[in-house]
Image: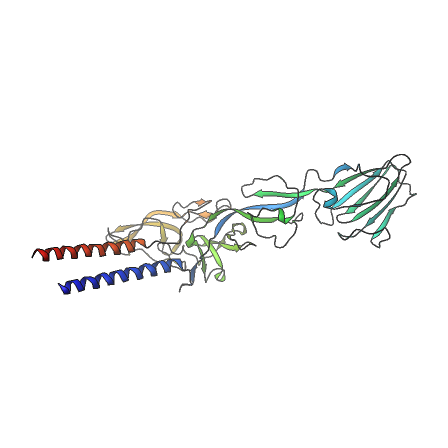
Length: 397
């Protein structure tokens, strides 16, 4: 009796310890992403397939619309070709100008001061100011002046009765946003970078205060998590840089936005490498993306069969299904061809259908080992019940 009891506790203790250690090690090995012997690393971060939008600073519909300055009088006045004066956004680009037109006057004096966005001149004696029109110059019924953005103009008009007229044409610019599906949003009233919503992850703005004409920016929005086993680093591809494998022989680079957000750079185009024979951590594929020959491996009704499409040794252009025949796996004629060119709107390749798709189902990296604990507890419970039954039998004796 004592021997049976001692044996029971020894077996239960060993089973409990083994189950615990195996569960901990198994969970740890799945969740860690350290360098593997084959030069393969699962990227232990969230990576996304992005949808892009682009923004560019363009002229709005009211650009250079004629505005009558009702506040103008014959008193000397300084005007500036700036956003503050115009009430419209004027980009700081040399080729952009404001136009001032004086009409219905007797005499006029004008100075243009090239300050390039600097402080307003104290007087027309400033070395940056150049006289354009003298007080007694005969200029006809009207005269126009073009002033570069950031510069000032000094205007002193005179009319015998009333005031001379001043009309101004101000530039007017804003951001035009175009999303990945071609939808164009209403043009904004500013081209300043801080007007861009924080929900967008900009890519090439860097430290620019404003978006200038002819210098568009790109950003990422509309996120879809990528398949975890396809976001990897391989020693023989891109010198070990982070990549996203779309299908055998093809991949995208993984880039980082200015705020640290990581995304699959589909806009830079898909790349090709014959070193990528298959997708790591899938059936028939090693951790370094090389095909493992699975044909002729043993199988039976208890295990070893493959239900999905799997790689074919010596041929990375297709995936095939395998059947269990006479105790070994045999390749069948049910195959799908690896697409050689997926369009931008469908950059991913679905290994279950062989078609290019826009999004893929999310694959979790975490694998639950709770069933090991359940099994262990169940076995221990069964041993307890067995011991109780034995004690009952001995009591009857």
